[in-house]
Length: 174
Image (tube, rainbow, N blue to C red; front, side):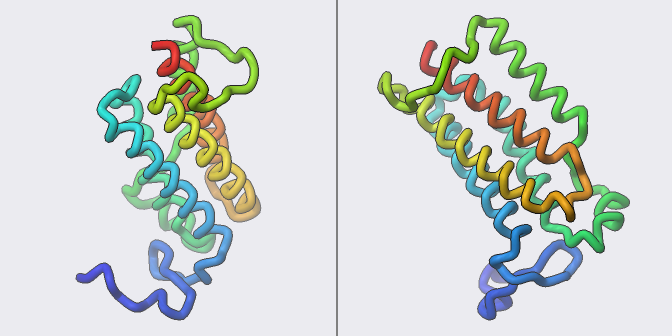
């Protein structure tokens, strides 16, 4: 099957399980922003200097699953829940909290606004770009709140952005 299907030429696109929505729908905005976050994290990984590439890899894996979870019409939420597709869980949120706590235990803490790139650290600046995209993704997901079947998703994104802030500061320090 070719990537070129022409199905989106009329301004609509497919969700998982076949329902179609306008490409400007809030659901596609949320999915697209999470895709941008995944790509921003890819830039961090591609440098080969990531503070912790395995953590970023795990985040990207969760984000790919999250895009699938959000690419489901509310009418099909139970069908998705009954499938083997991945979902963000409360345990995923707790895992991010643990990762953040571990970095804070190393002496990294909030001391005011960051100035990305101020010290010439490219990795830290890229992590900050990913963090800001993550914050936007969180806002886009919250715009779906009436149609969001998984309350762990916005929490996951909120913790992810906190973790990215900490990783950026750690990268600048190291």
